[in-house]
Length: 227
Image (cartoon, rainbow, N blue to C red; front, side, top):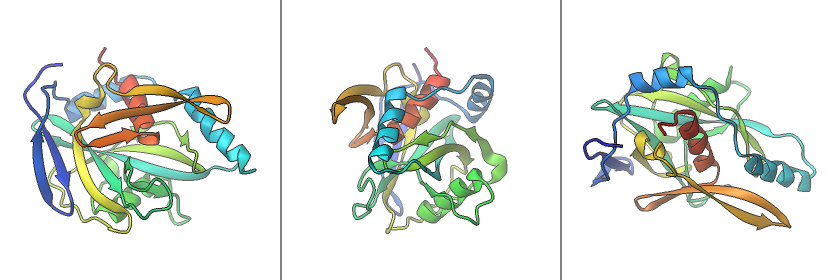
């Protein structure tokens, strides 16, 4: 890919720093809307899904709880950036890991989109409108017992984050183009109780994006593949 240098923006309640990254081709909201609507959904790695179902069987639990995450996209100068959170270190599940804002479905939520929008506003104070919905990816089962639906939303590039310290340690952005490069997200086999599974990962600056978040990004990147 080619293009001008892009920014990597980190928030911790407010703008903290801007780091220069490698050149890459800008991807706009218009491009993504057309591309996403014209490409078929990409199916998740069977070995990732199998790990989640095996974990549930060990717990004698076959019922995954519905949840949603928001892939929030902010456009600046014709280029989309993805919002990520670093989870608070005291959380029971996945403390300190990089993730999308999200959480479980509440009874008051009328659909999965409302869950995603509500959770994002609660965790990072960023508001999304239903008309800014691009679409959803297929639900992904997780080892923690959730069936997570990724919801893709466009958000105002001038958003002012308000982080819930009980849930989120920090917020940062990465250009979408970084995840669409060939082999940007790699997978490795690993052995658990005699079974081989796959784990996906990618380093971004000082952060390691891995697990469910990386698997979702990989699925999105394959659907939008520029190769």
